[in-house]
Image 1 (tube, rainbow, N blue to C red):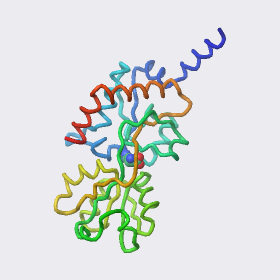
Image 2: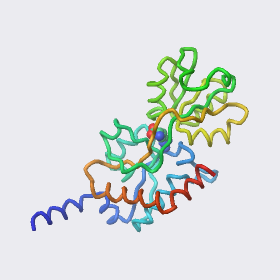
Image 3: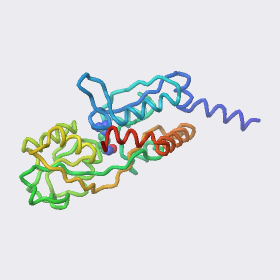
Image 4: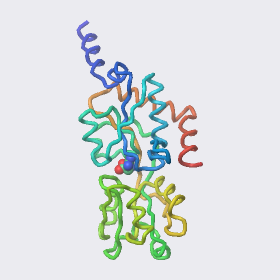
Length: 247
Ligand code: ARG
């Protein structure tokens, strides 16, 4: 009987129970990574992750609150309970996974390159950029930055606080290239890149994206794993993918 009582005490501590009691799910994200989270013309935050967050809140029967958080500080914000889940296009990396838990990934992406068009005949992959004469940009605290430093170490690295500013730097002819998740590049090219930049759209890293939660919470991890598995298999994921990513 004592074991059972212990189990109940533990379940009460789960973020899952707290969400149900509070009747509110708090999602932390940084709306700079289109088409996952971005601000529309009316100022609303929309995107692939937002739709997933809405479904998640619906499946729990609670209201959804978006907590706008800078990506560079998003793990500390989760750890200090500013929200319940990071849902912000976050790549599951081994180093992040030592700090937080990830349920199974909801999509796989990889790094791609937005290239200044004057280099279109000289640069064909990240390897060609590995030269001190090139300036390669990305966003601080992201896997784009990590990949640039690790795989293009000889290039001059230029860090930006927002992905859109880094990509615009290429369009404006300052940086030679911007390294970032492929889906961002596809949307950026359609909006600002035409005739000014080219997209090297062969991803050169393997990046599963996942929701981030605090460690030591098997109940919540189990719920989210089953949620992700469900939406991937029942057509929901395909519908959202078509709506935001591959239309
Ligand atoms: N996938 C990349 C990473 O995990 C970029 C994510 C940026 N997300 C955002 N909402 N700005 O580092």
